[in-house]
Length: 306
Image 1 (cartoon, rainbow, N blue to C red):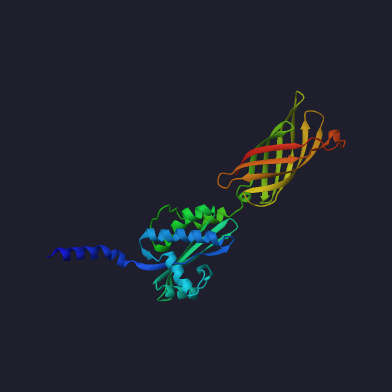
Image 2: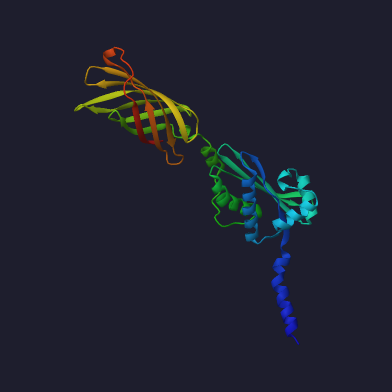
């Protein structure tokens, strides 16, 4: 007699959490700046999955949402930029809450934003954003989970990183050659030589330095010293450059050389490790008598910036 009543009570008890969940629609992220609509769509799918995993909302399936909107004449929610447009979509979908946002890129900086909109009240309940100086992959695997947790008011979520202070983000936005202006490097190449270079970046594009080392050949070893001026084509970690080196050698009679070169340098953000290669054509002035262009100068260097 009591068995049917007991089974019904248990079914009702276990269905209460599902009934308590409010239905939400997650609209496609708007793509801004140098980020494609396809990338924004992939990020939207990840955010939708994270919201489902949170258990806080019952998420309207994307296929059902797209079908309803197509029937109403909407082709893509990525074109819906205003709050009024979002509210109209929410009413068509018959949901209480909407989650919308944007994904943008400015230089090397990605920005991801989310907002929760109450469709009935026509109000934005919560809006959060996070910036990331990182690859696009990290934006999806690290920044998106952290932002979803923050937007939903949760303390933890899978793969959630610690929120970076704004001062650290500002420091990361400084060009690497401005953040680490000093560079000490070991250089070697052809013709046979090895040396130690020290340079200082006056700004992200221009550096001055001193060079010194030894030349070997024909069973002799001569020292050399000189100065360098270098111009970088861009302020990124990987940058091409042109430079001009003026050298003198000793202890023989003072020979003089000028070497215009072109090359590249990679200076790693974070560690300051540096690697580069260059190619030039030395112009020799033996005993201050103008000579001419001689062998090709090819070099590689490994250094540390600080």
